[in-house]
Image 1: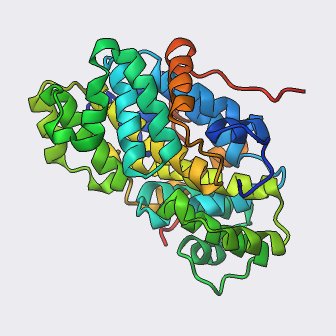
Image 2: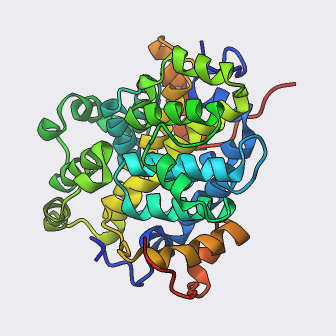
Image 3: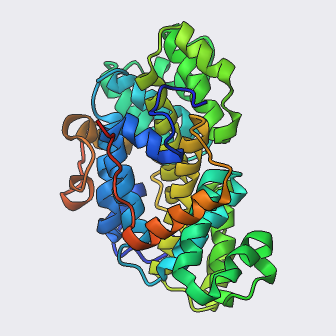
Length: 182
Length: 193
């Protein structure tokens, strides 16, 4: 049960933003601009960075939902999402994405963990300033979303099917603030 | 110098936001909804939570920026602000705020570190669900802001005297694009700590 009285039967962050729409609105706008807005990083990869950071933060709700969204957006390459979550170093992805995931992993630990050599390694693989910026901010934002969801112990569904549906909705519609049904 | 070319020389998160205004917009709205009002928790209490979490995350720019804003609201009581920022148990603050700061410190470690006992203690000291919610989200949000600032190596002014004019600007006008799109506040240089 959640630590505070949020609407029942609503999973994860959705129940929290229904409880407090004043903060929910900018949170959903941030998710939308980071994961669907303008960026040189494809949406499937941005969702993958989100799932990867959430996995490192042991946030089951965010990891499963963003992994599901990433799979939908990757289409026939969906299997690489699990590869990355299992072992990013061995996954069949570009070296550039590997170097960005490495930076995201450092951000997950702490901002000060990101060193000039991590940035230089990403640049060597062709990453631009904008790609590095977006990676750091997505990773940082999921250090917030993950703590928000788990810090208030919101409901984490156990049924994998629930996440498949969520992933489809996220891939199709993006991040739309849910409203409490009267 | 930041790790990326942000094409400006603004300090801390201001420089990053100027580089990326489309992501800065919801971040500014979030900061305002979390910090710039006293509905439930007081604005000073909100800034103190932000300063303490930023201290725990070792983010120099954020801990001093938000400590200065708290200081502005608390009539310059820098000693109290520094006690709270650094987690000194002797700080003369309410038991409720102490209990909430404890929740915030747990959130800084990780969401799952927050235990039912931490929440119960806050409730016992009079915290409402909304106050517990805001505490958790402020702490979580600073786990983002701090990582954004340090993860990109944002410019961090070492001169603590440069923080009060920016703090005054935010306390009086709130957060938002104006902190990077208008000219930077400069005030009479306040003696560094």
